[in-house]
Image (cartoon, rainbow, N blue to C red; front, top):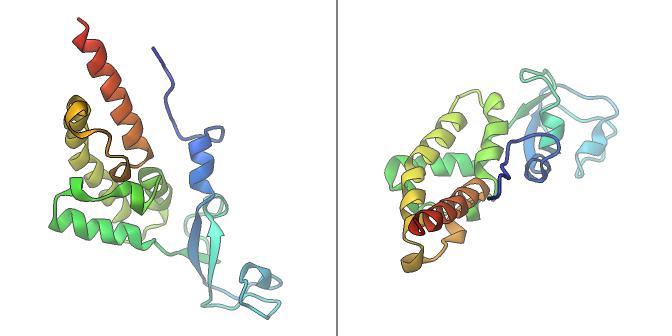
Amino acid sequence: MNNHSYYPNYYAVEDVFVTQEKVECKVNTKLLKMGFLDAGSESEDLQEGRTVTLPLWYIKELKINNPYFSVCIPDIYKNVHKAVCEAESTHIELGKLHTYFYEYGRYLTPYDRNHIVGKIVFETMRHRVRHLLDISKNIIEHGKPEHRLDNIESKLYEEGVKTNNLVRFF
């Protein structure tokens, strides 16, 4: 049996993919000689109030309450929050929204001043786990709904199918 598991760390390929994602950040103070961070800027300095896109690996190395940048939470978490509150969360196509929805949200949670991203990630997973269990048992009827699952859900689905196949043989 395959004992491979994913735990976010420096050496996990999935973690590298997640931390390569770009995050919009608002510049809080004038940064001298940092104008190169903004591709549209003609100035040598990065002006206060500008929005720059930085990789997540850079952002996570800064202090959470750093004086230079404020992280802007991506719209996908705002849209998912609305969908989870208004509709069935199993109808949300997380794979299309973001391949690494849960991991990306986990990294953004410390920078969310409204504390909504952590709740969204938790509630979305809580609602979808039961659905993952059901579809992994009924693989013959439906097939794999790849476009609806993110990376972690796909792995849970595959493990559920393997487990159900092993149980059938006993």
